[in-house]
Image 1 (tube, rainbow, N blue to C red):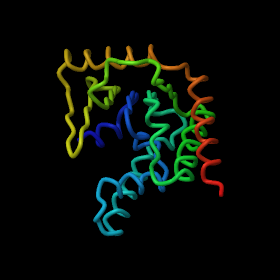
Image 2: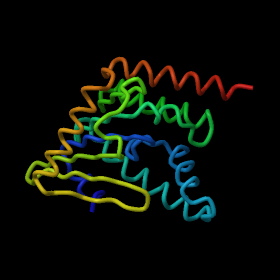
Image 3: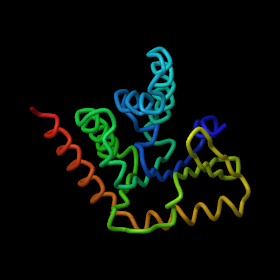
Length: 188
């Protein structure tokens, strides 16, 4: 249901505390994440999951819709998935999307301390002809909320996160810096 809603959303605002959001993942990053989730899965299962993840990313092929605004916790940049080379590629992909003005990304630095979404990820979706939704995700589960008061509470949470995060320009600089650090770590 959440993926179907995402496909018709005009605006997606997402707070990612641990992982690069699925719409922004590279193939190698997605593969590393799915392998970590399912260490004993066959390659065919992992291939199927990665293909589905990359298919979802085609939502961003349109140059303007949906508007994607993501707040990444600094942990997303620092937690290695796969290898330093995989992380460098993944972070460079995010940076390239920012530089093409396709997405807005802010990084919530560790120095921000405790914040309004310490309990997990959050995705808000707005639509042209439907009320907004909030999607909360945890291990092996997800909850799609449509109650106006609940969605409004999650919108406030997102606004507080964005207010505590680095500016988009400072966030891009940090993402590119961490990508370079990862690339250098991968050198012999």
